[in-house]
Image (cartoon, rainbow, N blue to C red):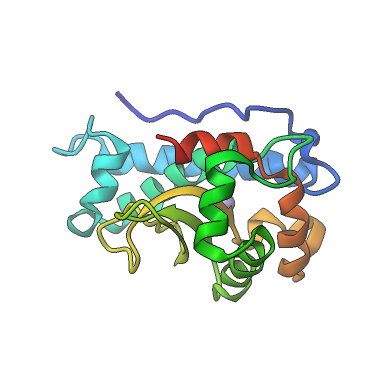
Length: 200
Ligand code: MN3
């Protein structure tokens, strides 16, 4: 069973003005599609064909770079579309809100630390909110298309929120202003989906 490109769960224009339609179209239809196609090509005819993406990521140190880059790219973007939504933003409530307060002191402090991780990730990569082995939350960032599910991760964990800080995610509208993109992105975070992932 080859991997397939998931549909965007909303129209490309629906995250405007925070993320523009053209960026969403190119990001999903070209970049994410390329990760899926290249991942399938890298696995075709190998003993790893048919394995779950999570299994591949957990053993990524033993797999070729094409699987790491494109398998990470496929997992990361599949999550990214889902943790955003139109008319979203605000602050998480319930168990997730409480866990964020417990880990970071307050929601504002969490946003500050997450924004810092996203801003200071040099070059291309991702910022993550993860659940650790002890069930507590932590923030980390990874280069390129790596993620905390990979056995090569500096800080392994289960990501429940991820922010793409590759230039392709924001350059058309924000050019070099990554911090402006990060500030705007909070307005489209789908906390219901993050809470669902937290509860898994
Ligand atoms: Mn991307």
